[in-house]
Image (cartoon, rainbow, N blue to C red):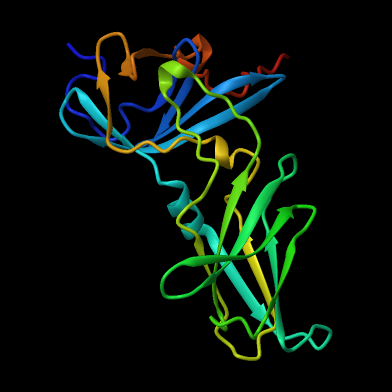
Length: 240
């Protein structure tokens, strides 16, 4: 008898699981893996989709850092009379507070990426690109960090400090001289998330086995499992 009764029905894995170091919260075929950092702070290591391969094995996949950026990056281009019309002012916007990032802007030619300029974000947010650069309106950018992050040897957590290949930086209107780049997914935990591709988790009687760790399901509180009493109107009686 398996923990979830054999075949994977919609939502049978849903719940919170704990190993010695990590917590796995599963809801609707999505697993959020995290660890408790202390002082009420929970650090997300990965967010994976779950796919049933057999009755006893579940596949885990998470998007690569590059895919995560490409799925949330937004460009807003405009013209400002206050800016030099012969240059493009590129402003980056990430929801970060505690980390510093090195942003490298590259000039795209047909054979290589030539570093044009580097800035330290968030102290520096804007890069000014002259229009006489050979590629005219086609550039790329990359981001790296010098910060240190949680690493557990047993888990072999991959923490990318560089995002490569670089990302497109292109303006379409020839009059554009202001380009605003917003990437909502790059926050203070972005570089601390691991990239998981094609790994398997075993469903067993005791719980879930993944990367040599046993994740046991958190028992629901008794009051959550018991049916709640109905609220009724007290009986009233008339006395003569």
